[in-house]
Image (cartoon, rainbow, N blue to C red; front, side, top):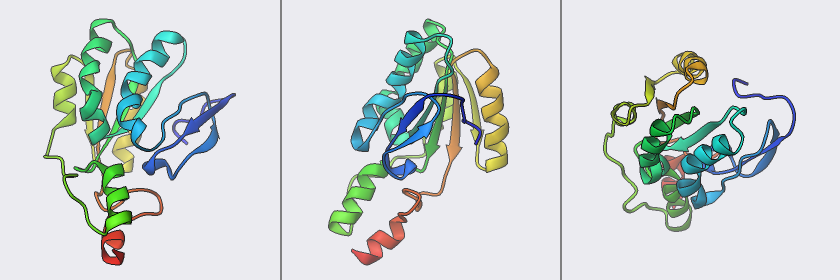
Length: 173
């Protein structure tokens, strides 16, 4: 409910969103592995295309680490938008597909990268959170700070999507 926006339709996708679906609020699109490459740079592009719009990117740590260096571009060109990075220490979508298809995962672990410190290193505003209450406060601050902002949100690595648990997929494998 924190991201509801009047008017329009936004296209959401990816494993954390539970698949593609239309939801109220604008236009965004990412599905399957494309989200790893599109989400963050797409957020910059969306804000540049419509500077009056509010842009909030939702990304996993794997996807953010693939293209997060573009945060330097957003800071240098003063492109204010918010990114929430769900940090589970996995290339989660890849882990999901591997566990479903093969009953195991290979090469999907990500080290303990402090996403907020990385963001601050590029000159962005950043918060680290690990609970829903902390996320609510950080999201409110990030959305109103007027600068590129990143929220590093630690999440349970077992929860790959609203319906998929890694432990269950591996046990069923």
